[in-house]
Image (cartoon, rainbow, N blue to C red; front, side):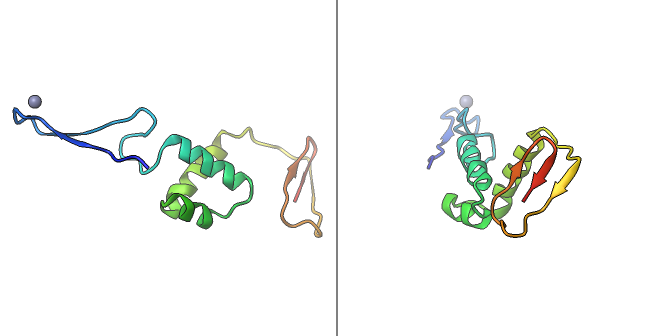
Length: 99
Ligand SMILES: [Zn+2]
């Protein structure tokens, strides 16, 4: 947890919020926390559970997951195989997508 300081100029210029390179302006969590949340999501941890662990909103987690998904090289499967006995693991191969 980061306690951001609000600084005030003694000559009256105004107030200034402390900044940190690891936290984007206006962000509610660090980039490292977002990466950790994405990793948890990749491990099949539900977004609702992740948001509770990090103390952020559901959409904050979901935006990080969607942004990470946009960086993944798209898979263009030629066939889709479905194994109805395995419901929790996903596996991508060159030619098939299995769920
Ligand atoms: Zn000043």
